[in-house]
Amino acid sequence: MENIEKIKKQYKRFFAEKYYNKTEEKLTEVESNKCSSLAEFWAYIDIVLPEDHASYTIFDFNGHAISKDGRHQLNTLSQDIIIPAKDKICRYCWGMSWEDINKQKAVNENIMAFLRKKSIMKDRLRRGDNIVIFGTSQKPIGRTMLASIVMKEAIKLRVICKDRSQTYDWIDFSKLFQAIKEDSMDLADYKSCDWLVVDNIMRKYRSAKQTTLIVDVIDSFFIDRFKYKLPTILVFKSDIRDKSLSIEKTWGVGVNRILRSKRTCKIPLSEKI
Image 1: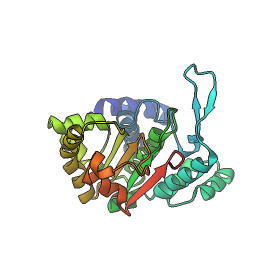
Image 2: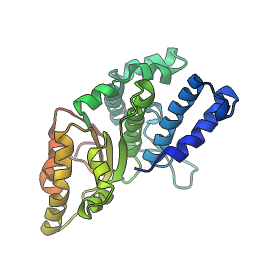
Image 3: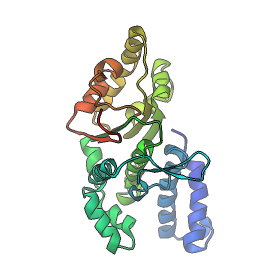
Image 4: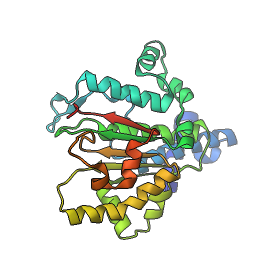
């Protein structure tokens, strides 16, 4: 993961001006600590989350996408899929149902501050609770959006619990495969980070030899993350419920253990095949 110090300094100057109308040098110790904490949070958001995903919250997940020309709003998911998905994210992050959170939003002017107090992400980290987000669609259906919402809540622990020892990473499956295959210098970070999103896991038609190679390369990586209870968020661009799909043969024992575990929250974003 990139070093955050340069971005953190920029944010700290920004917050010093925004909240206290001061330069960084003139902040009191208390003011400096507050600005530093916020700056660190937003620096990690910038570095870890995909571009344009920093501002998303659970209230933005509505099954709509913008057309390529930017002129139209497309319906990509039915309410029968959206509501259960929201409910699972809410229970994972805050230990509350979507219905209860929506009721709170109606009467609470600062719903995000309310949710910060309800966060159970520290418990998720302690238990090593994983998430799998999946669904088949040619249109955007919010798989990466949901993963970014969860990761953002994980990073918020730096502010909520003042726990600054946690680490995070986000990588596409294809790049992870290359990193493992080439024994990249970044691989140690992916192996050991507290929170990891593996995005864009695709089901491709490969020869038996190619599939065996992929499984052999990646298997120990996921086995170790599962063994050491490091929360992993897997984002599949296919439906893992497809009966014709063998998870173990396609992606290995490690991925299969995560998918079958009672510690894993599974969120479908497409109709069951």
